[in-house]
Image (cartoon, one colour):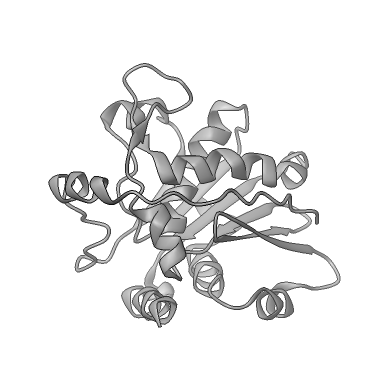
Amino acid sequence: MLKYLFFILLTISLNANKIPNPNNLLVTPKLAVNYATDSYLTPSAFKKKYKNSDNKVGSTVYNGVRLYAIEESKYVVLIFRGTASIYNATVDINIGSTPFMGLKGTKVHQGFYDIAIHSKDIFREPLQKNKPMFIIGHSLGGAVSVLLGGVSQHSGYDNVVVYSFGSPAVGNIEFVKSIKGLKHYRYVHKQDVVAKLDKQFAKTLHKYILKINVINTPITI
């Protein structure tokens, strides 16, 4: 039931046809919305919809979060599904902070950052293609997308674009400064309480941190 609530939230919150395409990007906002929405499909249904003779599609799970990779001839797309189960919610509420890339003064969401760091290893084959990379996600997936975009930027990947939909805040002002120059297009519905999560409320949730097992399966596409 929870996954359908988030699915509905995404589809009714955004009218993709009205979102302009900034800088004529290869992956348009409309296509990014479709990827984010369809990340809630089963892996087989997702692959059936997007696989064709000219591309490669891969999927795996890390800490209960579904990840997809699509390699087209001119670019690579990495997609993170949002919260779709109570298991995913354990990542959401693991809101202890940690430095970003070891940079002094930076603080980011521990749960989201853990996924982003491990995703760099999971996506190592697509990342080695040296193609323009689009990182997309909704809700929890949007938060991870921002962090992976920052990690990729600091790791030497110059051609990175992030689309986040309904993403909560993931770090402090020093973190924001550390990813200056990252192409990040953030779309938030004005009534989305997740994207407006109050800092004090987040601190209150911190006492309910849950531990989850690590599952790390590389994607091969």
